[in-house]
Image (cartoon, rainbow, N blue to C red; front, side, top):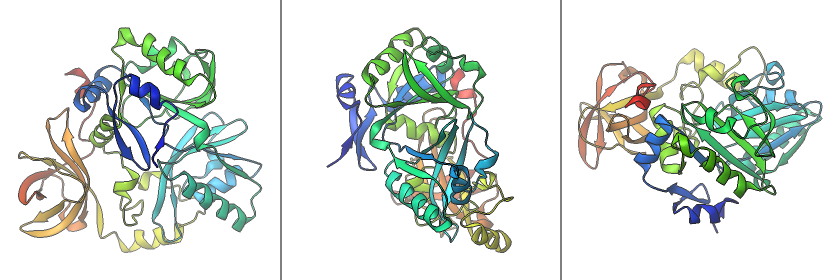
Length: 367
């Protein structure tokens, strides 16, 4: 049976069309994916992302545990800040990409949808192997996560916030009240726009909070946003999706996530990455913008002169560019920016240009 967000009945009331994603039944859209996408780019949108996980880490060795289990040295991340990182297997391949938030009494780790149990179990194995003094609690089912995203997100949330949100830096985090409900707030998101995420106990008045955000956001054009737009928004910004970009076992070096790696500390998978770094990767994530009509999708082949040289990991239609875009793993010798490759879409070769990320900058919000 599919899991549901604690806000499911409210989404039904708001007219959501639902989809299955990573074992959850979640809103795909309310009006249309394009309308919701452009709402976030131009104004502000409200997402329920409670399908994401929540793993709480406490104890005196919590930072040491995260430092070994991820590619980041958590000891250098101060209280009040978070960090985007990845969790690796011994062979350097990615288990999950995640954000952890450093709070006064511990760390909140946010795994991807359907990965909370895998991540929590892995952390426990790492803890036990190294003898760390740390508690690990999977509290995913006890939490609701709301994301308020878009250039006007701060103006909306400030109306019900107990803190000055302008003081929260990118990846900054703290506990604060929103409409008198205590939340963990972080300046994070998955859209490439200014945005905030609120993590709140599901036992609180989460229905009231969701409605309140919609109410105070009316003058700013706020709308509820489904997972369809969430996917197209992240794709335009070239943000990876765990089930797509890490499929089959990919390393940070292949997935263009080298920037997440803090090489100045020891972590699981480091030796494998150093070896791959020395030998060089065979395939790497590449960004393709269609020059002809066609919508690329996950799993489509990428060719050069009729020879297969890669495969699409994520693809779709860009609402801002009104053209097909894709991320694909391509052999290293075929990745020169400005060159063209063919994406095979339903048996037809569609020419696509290799471009630098992201596909869309800040210009879309002005259209």
